[in-house]
Image (cartoon, rainbow, N blue to C red; front, side, top):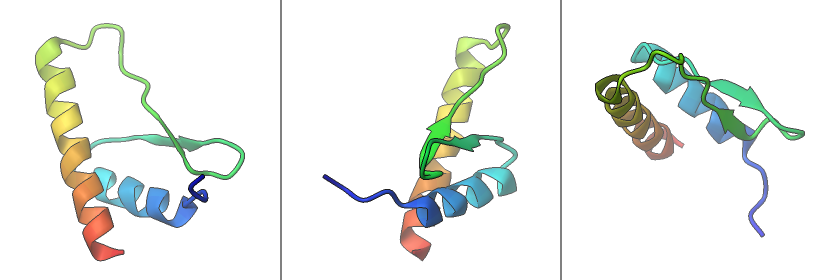
Amino acid sequence: MAKPNAALLKAVMAQCQKRGLIILACGMYGNVIRFVPALTLSDEEMDEGIGVFGEAFEAAVASS
């Protein structure tokens, strides 16, 4: 089982923030990502947000 990696989550959050995407950290070890989309979110906006998250995640992993 993998160990919780709160430092990586902080890096992902910072990269998301740079790109204008807000995500929430939660969980007992601060290593869980919570997405809370608006109920009026369109499919296009969801696709855009997931794309931004992917870029942010890749950037965070590359810098760690």
